Length: 82
Image 1 (cartoon, rainbow, N blue to C red):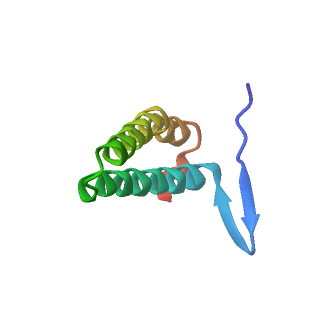
Image 2 (cartoon, rainbow, N blue to C red):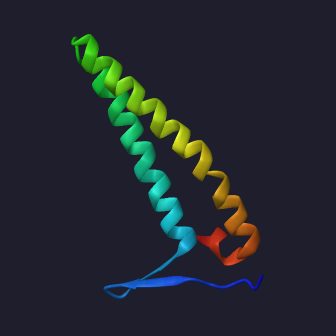
Image 3 (cartoon, rainbow, N blue to C red):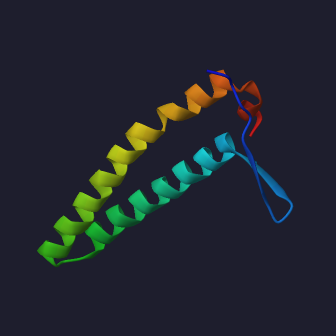
């Protein structure tokens, strides 16, 4: 399988797959933290459970996606610089 360098140009901003994955991970971490905060702030037990479950599901997604960064960095060393 040949290695390809994928880039996307958004309004003059060049984004590689590596930078997009890192950006997505940062967003997921923010979402997870928000769900955890919502769970702490609410007194409604049903809502608390909903937010706790959502935070846990987001954590599971992160655990699946985060290893992809090291794979991308091994495939395309220039991604380490982002």
